[in-house]
Image: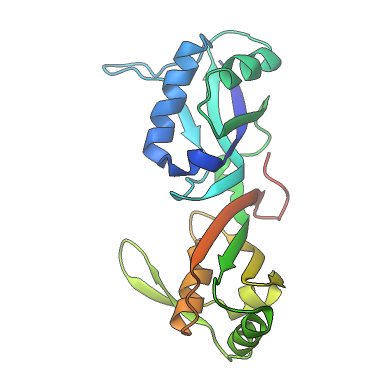
Length: 218
C-alpha cells in the first residue's frame, strides 16, 4: 500500500457541503475516477480516507487535506488529474503527494475572518475596534462536550493582523488547532457580539495548517 495526501480547496458553493457530505462526495469521486484506493478489510469493507481537521460548515479553505492509500501504483499526477475531473463546483484538487507529517502533528491553523457592517463608516468601526482592544480581557465562552469554559482571547486578537476599510474589518490570525487545545475562528464573532458590536455579515476562510513547531503542514 502506498500512502498519499491530497490537498484541495473548498470555496464558493462548496462551503455549503458539510463534512459528512464531503466524505461521501470524495468516496464516490474516487470510485468514479477508478483510482485504486485501498479498502478496509473485514465484515464491512469501505474506502479508506481520513481528513485532517474537519472544516466548519459555511467556511471556505485554501488548505484541506485528505489521506488515503493506493492499493497499486499510479503516478500522483494521474491521481490528481482523474480526481479533479470528478470534483463538484468549488472543490479544487491542488496537489497529490506522499504525506510528510502525521495528522496528529497539526497544532495550529490560520484564518481570514471578514466582518461587515452595512451602516457604519470607517471611523465608527475604528472606534469600536479600539474600544474592544483596550479592554483588559476579551472573554468568550468555549463549549466542549463536557463543559463550558471561559477563554480570554485578548492576546490572540492583539497579535492578529487587522485591516479596516469602509464597512469592513478583516482579521488574519493563527489559532490553536491541536487535539488537546483548539479554538474556532467563530471566537472573534463571539467577542464582538459580547461587547455589543454585531456585524451584519461574516465570511471565514482557512488559509493554512501548521504543526506544533509552526511549520506548514505537508
